[in-house]
Amino acid sequence: MDWVKIIHILCVMGWMTSIFAVPRALIYWRREYDRLGEFGPLGDLTIRLYRFSAGLGVIALATGLWLGWQWDFAAWVWLKLSLVGALALHYIWTGKMVIKARRGTFDESEMFLRIFNEVSVFGVIAILWVVVVKPF
Image 1: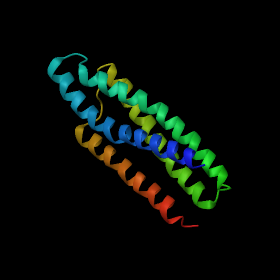
Image 2: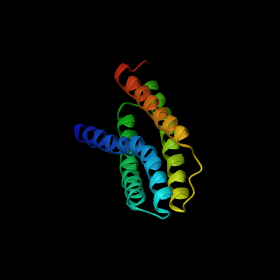
Image 3: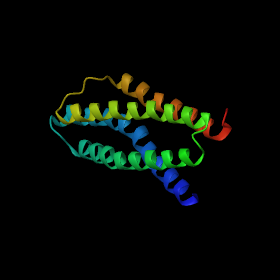
Image 4: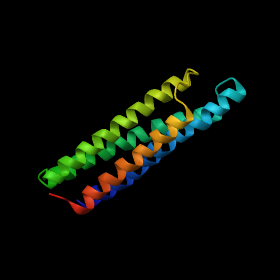
């Protein structure tokens, strides 16, 4: 079970990197697109980061479910899974923004993207609190 935990933590760290970095990268990608008028290196980097971390997210979810099963899906595990589900929705929303940006459509303002980016931080703090404290 220790190896599963190690793999889980490692994949979560990689997935979180993308959750925190891609919304911020969209800000800079938009600036680059406005300057160049075309798809540039920042767009390529953002897409690659998002796609790579999707696989890490799937592995993190699979190992997390396996660990939850090992802990008989205690109440705190269900709370954690709910919060992870909310974070996954945030990630999917980010992916939709990346797809639109690839077509040259940047609908969201910089302010929105900055706030959107910070929302994920609160989600991660809540997840960490549940894992450490195990409130029920």
